[in-house]
Amino acid sequence: MNKNKRSEKKGEVYKISGEKTAIVNVHSRKLHNRYYKIIQSNKKYMVHFETVPTIGEKVVIVSCKPISKRKKWRIKEMGNT
Image 1: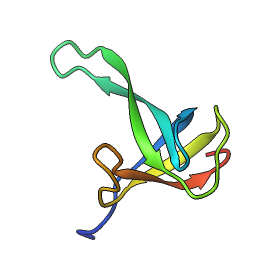
Image 2 (image 1 turned 180 degrees about the vertical axis):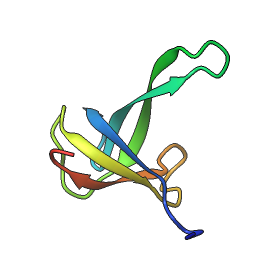
Image 3 (image 1 turned 90 degrees about the horizontal axis):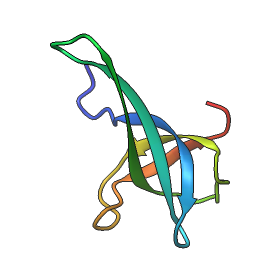
């Protein structure tokens, strides 16, 4: 098992804020451990990018070393994922 594997998440670009910052909305579904009901949740991550994505575009984000106080993710690939 590789210790240095970076965590990846799939999401949708929610907002462009700043020159190299985008906010990505990640949708997740989990099973409740007592009631066995599917719980849906959304979380927004601030991510760094080099090429400008469009709002609503599907992206894959990967964790990285902290770029700023709240930016700890970057865009790995854009397009239909």
